[in-house]
Length: 197
Image 1 (spheres, rainbow, N blue to C red):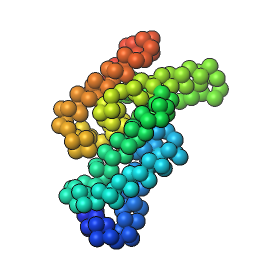
Image 2: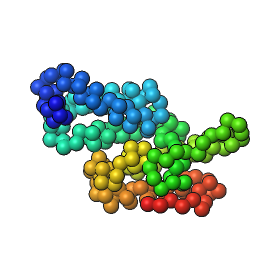
Image 3: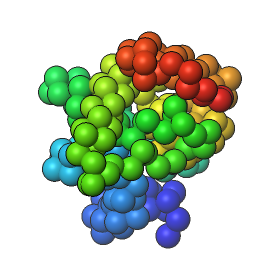
Image 4: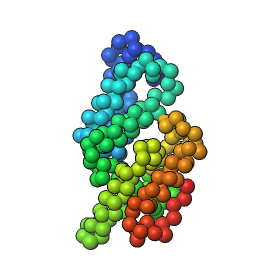
């Protein structure tokens, strides 16, 4: 069954169809939640909430062309809201955003930690915490755009569909987000780091 057929079956009360939908998208939802929360346990809890909402919203979903975009949106919203509620945003949000200071492409590797040089590891860890705190403090829409672009590696067009915005609005969110991250980081760390849009 395709997604629309599964959703129609869920609306009819077919529990096996809901199980199939969860099985099909559990990795996407769990990974998206984890990338924001950085806690497997919290990600599992929020993923469960996402699928409860999916079940409750099945009637609306029958008109969705792309269920995965809807799930991205709900997963991001619930994860970010959880962070705000728990007031643990500073060190549990997006990791590896350091790549925006060093690479053009999404999904690039962070600076490796050296086990041979504890001083280097500590400095890299401190930089990572600072970046995580900066990204966690972004306004929600900028934060969502970051997750989708740098971790999910979606294109501007795909992010537009997920967030319900134009591609130019997505680009603007990313530009403002990068600038806000720079401003919150130490000047000696962010200085002279070229970021291309």
